[in-house]
View 1 (cartoon, rainbow, N blue to C red):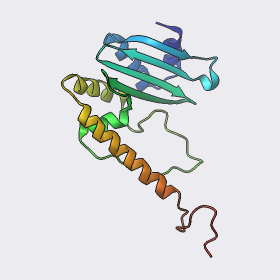
View 2 (tube, rainbow, N blue to C red):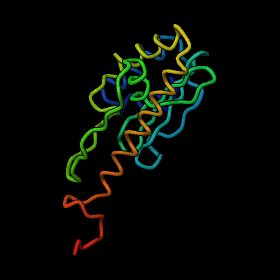
View 3 (cartoon, rainbow, N blue to C red):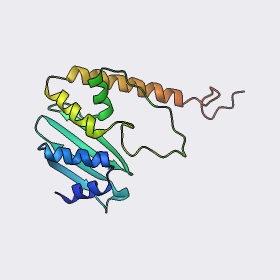
View 4 (tube, rainbow, N blue to C red):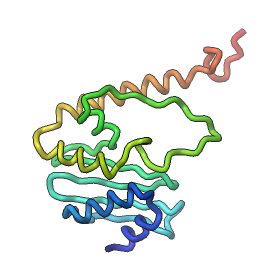
Length: 164
């Protein structure tokens, strides 16, 4: 086990740690690693590869994220893969107040230990490029709509306007 993996396991949520161990048990090789205790904010990056699938786990400012890519494909966040696999629409969450803490891992409310193996199994049984392209476009649309609504103040006026 590498220093970065050991460090990641010491800082990870139980769900993220179980997923890292699952990658190792399933024959994924760590092909790139960065960060650790001396990195700013304790950031870490672990890239796993098993030929047909790559996964990158990142801890950035104490928040864990994962991107997955199939052979020749672009990496996408787990939320995009889940949307594609489930055949659902992208939906953003309501904006949290500044006082609320961020989720420990993204996507919020999803178990990596359950969903990452399911996505990887789903990828391995066929060409998923059309599904993932559709889901990625849908997430782009959802985020554009989300940020467009965030530009409006509660009174419907653009930020900085006095509405007179």
